[in-house]
Amino acid sequence: MIRERAESGVRVLILLAIGTMAGAAAFTHVHDLTVAHGQPDWIGWANAVAVELMAIYLGLEIRARRRSGRPVGLVGVLLIAFALLSLAAQVAEAEPSVWGWIVAAVPSLAFLALVKVVLSSGPATPPAPEPDQPQDDWYDEPQPVELAPPAPVMPPASAAVLPPVRVVHPNRPQVVGIIR
Image 1 (cartoon, rainbow, N blue to C red):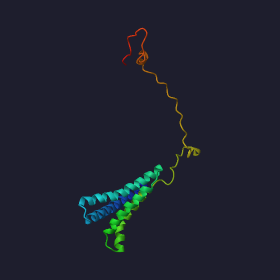
Image 2 (image 1 turned 60 degrees about the vertical axis):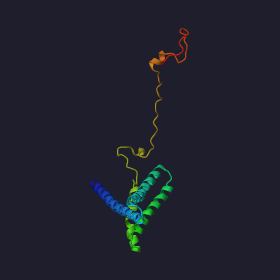
Image 3 (image 1 turned 90 degrees about the horizontal axis):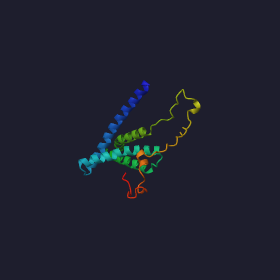
Image 4 (image 1 turned 45 degrees about the vertical axis):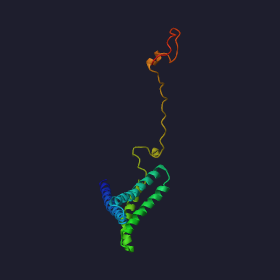
């Protein structure tokens, strides 16, 4: 138990370190490329936020759609498009050589791989049943519970005393209705 918690803690620290550094590099490259092509500084940061966070959001959306059984085609295409935009910004800011492009692409690729690993992780096997539960009930479907029929609704006591609306009683013909 302690070893699993320690391992989980180390994984979270690694996740945060890679995510922070790769995200910072990707944000900076998108920002710098935007500014280098004539846009104001704030638009550079807006582009960086849009491009980098859309990839994360679309990954989360794909996961949610798969859980609910909805199609993921368009969202997957959009994820690839935003990932390519991020990668293009990384490579465009690099030294114009093969190694320059590879090294510049590492933060974006690492960040995307990290998002993919985190979003695709889940339990591989169903949870183990409780030891005191009989084995033949471990994987049975739950049975529907039958509910008792609803109790009849009684009108309030005051409604039983008052006559229905627009009823004229023979002993009081001048009364057309009673205010309720």
